[in-house]
Length: 164
Image (cartoon, rainbow, N blue to C red):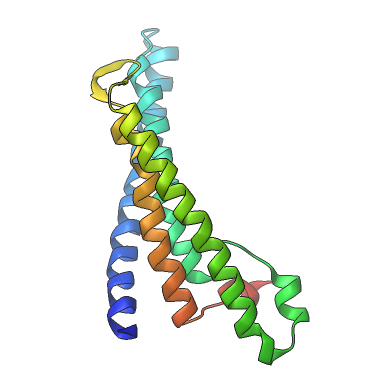
């Protein structure tokens, strides 16, 4: 079971990272396009603002699982270093349970918010429902849960290795 969870997490994290990078590229490209349209051609494209926000929201929620997997999302370095080595696993469990609790709350309310927002349209892009922006919360929460569980099963504390 452990190997299956780690394998699923590996592939979902890889896909999420590629998509998060694509969202950053889209936001950057749209930002350059928006500046060009507004200040060079003096014809602002209002729809770019909405899509930049949309892509940044998705980027953050797609990148969160990778941060959880690396052990760098909720950083309690000082406490982790102060705890004796035999109690570090207990601290990992407490941190994982707290993070999972937060992700369950984000999943629950994010799904509710997405369902309520499906009748709302994006400003400047009236044909697209806000559901597609808000659904990033539950998608990111589920992916983050996989990252949290994978980190607990196979801990990586990379932020501790690079800290000065």
